[in-house]
Image 1: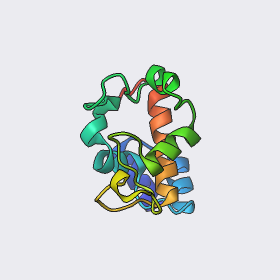
Image 2: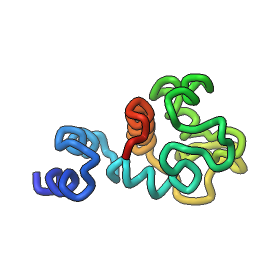
Image 3: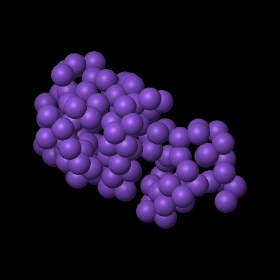
Amino acid sequence: MLVVGACTAVFGCCTPYLAAAHAAEGVTEEPSILFQRTCAGCHAGGGNILQPNSTLFAKDLDRNGMANVENIFQITYSGKGRMPGYGEKCAPRGQCTFGPRLSDSDIRALAEFVRLQADQGWTK
């Protein structure tokens, strides 16, 4: 409980229920922190510095076929265009990140985080 409480107190971005659920699913890091470390270089605040018409805001996600968590999971896992894939079995190699790969649980948590933020307008 102390870890869950600390997550809520320090980051203000998760409820104890969500933190406990993510820990039970094998998520290694709070999704908001994982997003900052892995995605925010290009997608800070839900934007997209490489393709301004492909933001992580709901209208762009929906228009670009990323309307649900599963679609977001797939593109995060395998990558597309200039966006690298982060999945453990991402292929071909040139499409994948050169950095550390993420577990399926972490990618799913990221996809859920992105969709939730999109639905809330990336307010925080």
